[in-house]
Image (cartoon, rainbow, N blue to C red; front, side, top):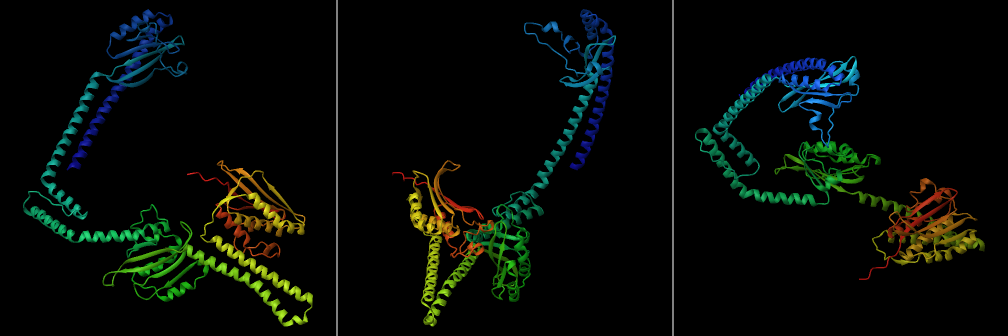
Length: 633
């Protein structure tokens, strides 16, 4: 009924306003025609006087014309430039004083050339809509100015339109006042108890078991209210007995799940997400997403979706992943980086998956899938997923395997050479000449030294990569460079190389460890000696420079004119057991020197850099902080 009343009232109001608008448009058209004709008539009578500059006659005629009708609001005359020289009720003489105000009519620039007929417009005033008529003043083809006349609206039409509009609005408001009063009466008398029951049911559903309805109604409605109150009372008693304990247990469980280091996900039988802890959100990139209620396969990264889709559907349907599935998974090629192992045939035994995901960050995860059964272990209630980030474990295992493989290979070669030469000496020593026996012993001794260097480098690298903390103190870097030069000066002279020292005078002490920095420069200079041919030059530089943040540091550089390093080797050159000589020459080395240099510089909170060009030379450099005296307490 309210909708029908609304439609009818809107329709009648619309028709009424349409009729009023039509009447106003007709009145506006009449005012326009009247104003245009009136303006043309008046202009024709005053143009001769304006041409003769007889403003007295213009004023007399215009005043008589203005007083003879109430339809004219104003009459204004302006010259060619738009300056007003006479107007009713305005006149220039009436406002002329020491602060003269010049009033103008703003017209288009080409108005005098392009306008032959009057220009008409309307504007709104507090007394109604006024029609403005602008008539060009022409005399014998010469443009003299413009006449502006304002035409008042027809008062009868305005009054009737206002009355009609007010009556229509009053009728519309009256109708809707009656409808609202009827709706209020209906709500109070009929719908109020139903709404009270609806609110009560919503409160009960929200957990407010103290909800009661107290309305004096009899009959069937009264019985319904009584039954509702009795139900709410029973629920309240049940809540007091059990809800508090259940809520506490639930809070404990949620707190436990949210604080464990592993990711935890709980799915319903339709694979929709019921619970996920912060660790799982971070591992899978779900932070800030409303994932609860969504299908987990739509949220998984592509790697997880591809490998877990079938197992999840099997577990959700009540099937058990058989061991042959695990054997099949073990037969997958290594490139798929996927391994699955069945941990048992029981329906509650977890299924383990290990795979690598690329998003949000590349990591290796171990995933356990476990069916959640009801208390009778018959129906599937959901699936529990546990995610463990084993990226570090995988990296350590790979690094350990690679390290053992490299060390074994490096140890096998010198041991094999030592054993071979010693066996030869033992079995055929009497058949060998003195020079041959000396050569065999020198080779064995050389291989023993090589083995010793390898073991020492491995021990140094192991010590540097451990969690051992080194005490850093003031170190004179110039002294370290001087000691290195004394060590290698004879070796450089024997090889025909020149070592140059370029240390800035009065260099401040740096924050570092003397022995470790000596080992760094020794390794770098030793590499330069090894990889620079006779006639080359090795430079050791140390100087102070200011960083972009205006913090001063000391830079140490070791340059040579050696064979250089290929661009593809520059990233791997600091890895353990990587040797450039494997590609460019056959000089011996453990491949641990630059790895030791890198770890020592990182212990000094810096980084080693290099620039190299094959056939031109190589420059290594690193920056050290200047030592600051501790503040006195």
